[in-house]
Length: 448
Ligand code: ADP
Ligand code: MG
Image (cartoon, rainbow, N blue to C red):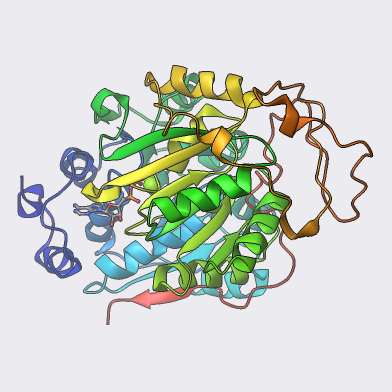
């Protein structure tokens, strides 16, 4: 299958060619012709399979004719996070370079004034997170009556993040005869319901997961103890000769502390988490992409869907609480045909989390190197008082290293005790943790 067989324009084929894609991925080959025929469509394919281009490419050709009017975007793409919205915008710039289309990015954390100005000029493509879009809509700053094409991207993440009511609300503001495309890695019942309600006679294109896991990613569990985690991690980084790695933690605090600790040990490490403002997140990501740093410590939400080429390793410093997050985390490596390795540090209190992951993926993750836990002594790093585990009641094989210290570690600072039932991300609102205005609102005409 070739891009030229899909019915795309010559200008677009040229831009695709220059971007270095040789052939369409399965979801692209399936989706593009239907989208060009203006059909509603449901696209289901796992992370990293190229879903973005499967709507961006045909949209560029669909929007090539016609003019944008003030306050009335011609098309709308909904994304769960600011980072994903920005990535879609980059795709439009890259493939739309031979077209004259305008776009605006409407994401939480940027000043409203600039966004409104862009909208007033009129845009062909509006890329938005649901919260910010509803906000502007309710202030009467935006009309959705001219929006004839709607994309609901990463629908399962939208569900996780509680955006479904916003999306339903938005759907009712758009013309009823619009074209609607929905993309998701999985189809949980609430997404199915949403599709039934707001898509009409959709064509469903589902790309089967190869045995529900990406064969390019080698996965391992690494047994350790709560206190031995940092040592175990550094040992792994050394042993693995890590090129570029993303390290996931369950909490923002852990992200901050681990990044600092790695820096103290001389690693080129950076961080991305929900308490950082948008410009710092972008800057950090750029440093990572440029290779200034080669280790990025991240929280789930901040790193959701991030597409960075050539990530050789993913480390789960904490086993994720939600099994779904595991799939998304390790999907940051092994992308576009490359090989990747994913390590999950596990303590005895993670048994249940690991069980859930293995149930979801149907894959029993092998234990790395056997008795690694015993090889990692619980060194007392930086002379900090040792933190006790609280409330998890996990038992370890090596009672001696895990014995609670005689006096409670009264450490000042922002450490929070481990919640007994951690079921929530502490930064799972994409528009949360915003600390100030960001000047770099993106409104660009692309194509020259
Ligand atoms: P998804 O949304 O399905 O998770 P993305 O759209 O983010 O996946 O694409 C994942 C990666 O694959 C990106 O780096 C993208 O540039 C790359 N990619 C997409 N389509 C192709 C293609 N046809 N050929 C080569 N690489 C591609
Ligand atoms: Mg995507």
